[in-house]
Image 1 (spheres, helix red, strand yellow):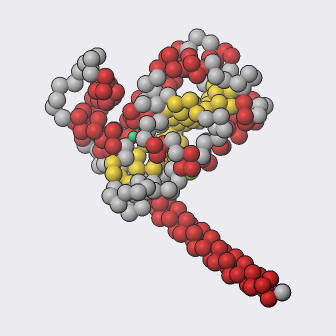
Image 2 (tube, protein in one colour):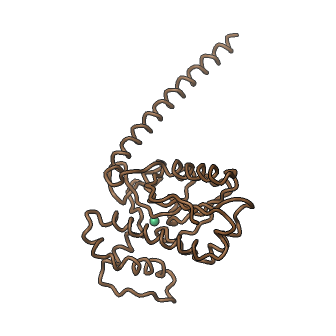
Image 3 (cartoon, protein in one colour):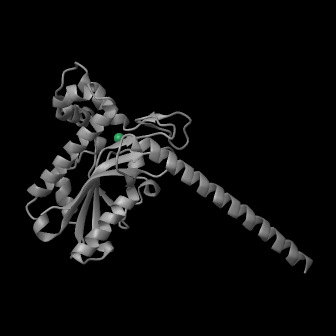
Length: 266
Ligand SMILES: [Zn+2]
């Protein structure tokens, strides 16, 4: 009897501790969410969590096409940065995994061959959803283009690769693609694409935000061209696109998404 009372008391003690920790976590989360909202709102008028945007898109497709969620396959074109592929930060509605089209900065470097492979993976009677965009980090302290990653004390550039492309395109270095230098292909290709906008970037209030929007435009243009030029994809399956800018935040905090487009490609 005494032993039971002891355990009951201990149980109560732990339950109480657990409740307190949970409340504390919840309060911290709400505080962080409000802080991040204020910071991000200065640069993006509208945004939600990445998860909310993607789930809303999938729900709309299920309603419009009268199909099950499990019959929608997702292809993504995001930068290779692990932040854009971390399941807890992204929480995409893709139980079977995502087909990854994105290379540097989110540009769909897999091209026509990649899209043809993907088109073979769409479930029978299902639909395809392409989720894509560029990305930028915002730290809890409001630094633009920087975040603190798990296990690091310092803040690192995000998108670091796009910043290097920006630095290169704004420099006076010669711009050309050397087919033999494969490691330079993706950054040089993007620098060439953005080169006509060099002055616009140079004169922007925050150049990396301008470059992030401009590279988004290039990504959307290419995704659309790939889909429209595919000989059979749209005639066999409903095809939807969801595009925007992924906003990464510190450590284990969620990714946000400033949506630019969601529509069916007919
Ligand atoms: Zn990146």
